[in-house]
Length: 89
View 1 (cartoon, rainbow, N blue to C red):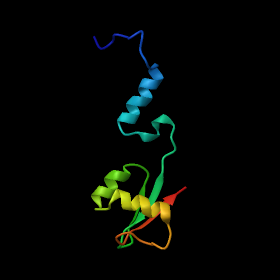
View 2: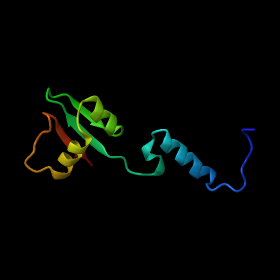
View 3: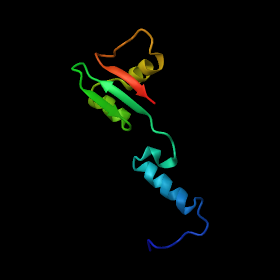
View 4: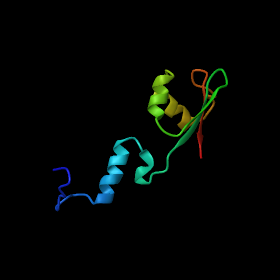
């Protein structure tokens, strides 16, 4: 029963594969450029983040909204809760 092919499918086989990979957490599967960040904790330990930004923020007790604001502004605020945060190109 699992081998039945649907003739009037809304998506092509390739599209279904991309959607499946995306749902499984591979955000670059749809051809999007992943964003890379460098986090330096108050003790100087460096973390390069290329995915799971939300999970990283939760794990280290950082508010995603505040981190995002910090990244967008980059004005006089040099740290957030002692963390230095940079967006990498």
